[in-house]
Image (cartoon, rainbow, N blue to C red; front, side, top):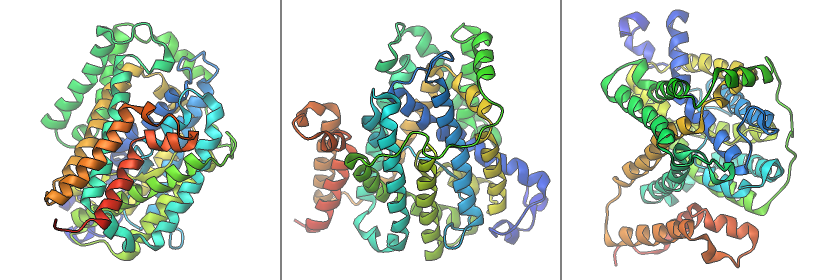
Length: 452
């Protein structure tokens, strides 16, 4: 769409500008498509890690649907906090919120193989961590000195590296708890390969909506392929669709509420990383869409919305929310800075979240097909971390900090038995790899002299 179709150039840079509905609605849906797959994937991964059955006849089927439903619903609600604001909460900018990948390395060990019983402690951590995240809005500008690109780049890279195993497991046929007899078969890998091939083709050889929604279209192509080769049947799709309700409201404290030291500490520490990522996203939006720096009020409001949105989601069985970086590139591409456009997308997400049949349809995607999309997404997380590290001046000091933090963090991920004598809560935090790497990098960056 040209500037003349939407409005004058100065209008497009104004967050309060509202394009005609004929253009605003497709633009809003476009923002949702850019983040849709990434938003629901963490819920599927946590369900798989906890050992939920993925079949439509599984007793865990309603729980998985509910988690997908809450991912959509509270992504929409948190996005409304950002665009419409409530007092100081929200940046009044076109920020799209969604379920955060950053917390997965903390969440997976907390629920691994423990089923629904592990979710009370998980959601206790989500709520307390979300409130702590909101409090960071008061000081986010003052603590940024402790989180330079060396630290944040390392942490984001570690997030990607810690999750690539999940992508490979999904592409091969699931996770160990799912006991797939065809694990690693050529058929499974072919489904994941179709997704990756189509995603790359659309991303680099098309423009506009197709390029923006490349992962989503790739998953649809993989789904069609899975139908053609018999990995999923129309009967199974019909069963999933019929078992899901047409409308359902969220249930407060559906999985209980339990305070766990490991969960609370893990979520609070990761809130620092998420808050700094949000600062970067807000700055990228104002720079790419309006050609200016973000104000302190916008950064504080965005951080408040991050935290309160996560805490609210946790009360109803949703996972932590954060601003989605995909949105930054989309705004820079379209040149439309209108927050009202994103509000339309948020309303669409809320509608999807209130209709469990949408979640039922998502659940019918074979795990191998999702694996293809996950490989792309998690690889991009690691690549984003490497991009952040490219801003670092690689002195001997910075190389030593990076080397020690990476070695300890990645080493503990690969060899969790190295800390088998630690208490349960501390062991979970250490074997995530992410937290020890972050703490080491932050502390060394603060105490080591600039030159040695």
